[in-house]
Length: 436
Image 1: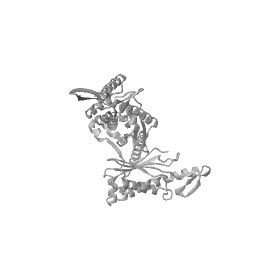
Image 2: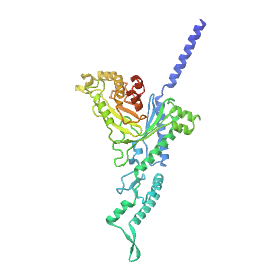
Image 3: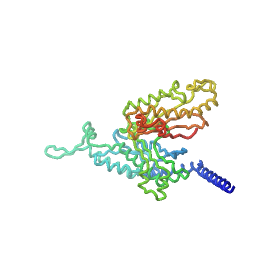
Image 4: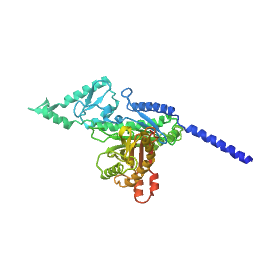
C-alpha cells in the first residue's frame, strides 16, 4: 500500500514538473515581439557603425519568429545594392556618392594605384560638406592637368591644351574609373561582419528563443525573388547573404564556454552570387514540376504559372512556386479544379483546403526526391530548395509558406540505391511559415 502511495505521489510530482516545463516553454508573443523590435534597432545601429554612418540613412530591418525554427532578420536588399550608396553619375563612367544632403559629386581616378586609397576615402566620407568641396577642387585640378600635355616645338618645351576627340580618347585610356561593383563587395563584407558581431554580442536579447533554434540575418525576402531588377547597370551578379547562429552557441559564448573565434567558426555564413548561365538540367526540373502541378495532373494544390529558379554559386538552386486551391466561381462560390468540383461555397472550400494540405506536403516532398535526382550540375554539398507560397485560406491553420531543402548528395545516394526512399525523405529539411 505504501509503495503504491509513493508511486502515485511520484507520478504527481513528475506531472507537475512537466506542466511547469510546458508553461516555461510557452512563448509570450508580446514579449517576443518586443525583443525582436529591440533587436531590429540594435542590428540597424551596428550596421550604421560598421559603415561609420549615424543619421546618414535609415535601415528598415524586419524580424519574425517561426516556432521550431527561430528568428529571421531580413535586411532590405538595397543595403547591399547600388541604389543605397550610389546615385546617377554626373558623367557616364563617373562614380557618384550621395552625402545625405542636396547635391552630389563624382570622382575620376587617374591610375590603378589610386583605387585602394579611393576605397578608403569612400568608406570614411560621410560626406562632410567642407571635405566634399576640397575633394571637388582637387578632382577639378586633376581633370585640368589631364587636359594638358607637354610637347617639344622648335627645340623648346611647350604646354598646350588637348581638346576634341584626342582628349576624349586620352580620358578613356588613361583614367581608371573605380568600379562600384568592387565597392558593393566591400559593403557586403561589412554587412557580414556587422551581422556576426550582432549575433555574438546581442543574440541573447531574444530571451525566449530556445537553445536549439536559430537566429538568421539575411538579405533574402521571404518566399519571393529578391534579385529582380537588382543591379540593372551592374557588371556583376547580385549577392545573396545569410549569417546564422544557434541560440545555444550564443549562450555558451556568453557563459565563457566558447571563445569569440569558436563562436564565429560555428556560425553558418553564405555569401553567394546568382549565376545567369543557362543550365539544361535546372530548366528541365522546372518544366517537370510545373507540369506536375497543373490542374489536370495535380490532385491537391495547383500552379498557374511556370516555376522559376535562381542558381547560387557554391550554394545550390532555389525554385519558387505559388500554388492555389481554387478559382473564383459564380455568386461568391469557388471552382476547385484538382477535385473536379464547381459551385463550392466558401466554408466547404476552406475545409477542403485544410484537408488537402498534408497530402500536398507529402506529394511535393516525394516529387522533389523522385525528379530532383535528375540534376547533374549541383555539387554534392549544394542544396536543392523549393520555396513555396501556399494558397490563401484565412484561419485554415495551414502555413503561409513552405520551404523544402535537400543536399545533392542525398539525391545522388537515393538515385544510386544507397538510401531507401524513407531514409531520403527523412533528410529533406522542412521549414514552415507562420500559420494563416
